[in-house]
Image (cartoon, rainbow, N blue to C red; front, side, top):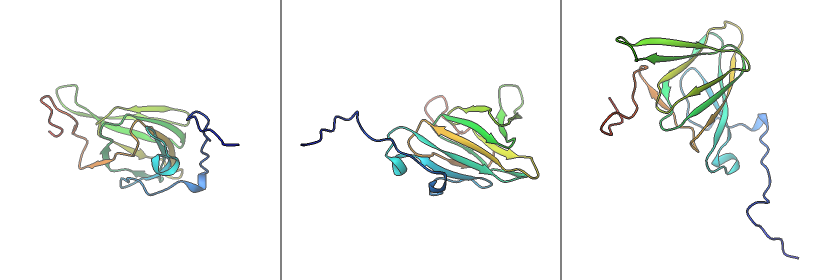
Length: 154
C-alpha cells in the first residue's frame, strides 16, 4: 500500500533544551540559542529561541531589521533599554521586567538588554516574524531604520 502525503498530515518537531544551537547571530554581552528555524526544524516563517544575559551584564546595542520580535521573560529581571526620540531631546528609557512579562520590539528599533541582578542570569524566549535571526549590532541607540524617502540609514 502506498502512503499519500497530502501536506497536512506531517509530523511535529520536538526540540529538546540540550539541542539548541549557538550557530546564530550574536550580540556582545548575551548569548542567543536557536530552537526553531528553517535550519533546525524546516520552519518557513518563524524563528524562535532563547537569550541568556549573565548577572550584572548588558548586551550591545542592536536591532532586528524588518523583524517584529516578541519576548517572554522566563527568569531574572532583565531591563530593555531604548532611545525615546519623541520629545525635543532624545531620552534613554528602561522597561523593567520579571518572569511572566512580555515585551514587543517593533522592526528597526535599536535597543539593548541589561541584567542588573548581581547573582541571577536573565533568560528570555524570543519569537521573530522573519525566518532567521536578523541582528544588526550598533554603536548606539540612535534610530537606523527606514527614513522618509526610502533611505535605511540616517
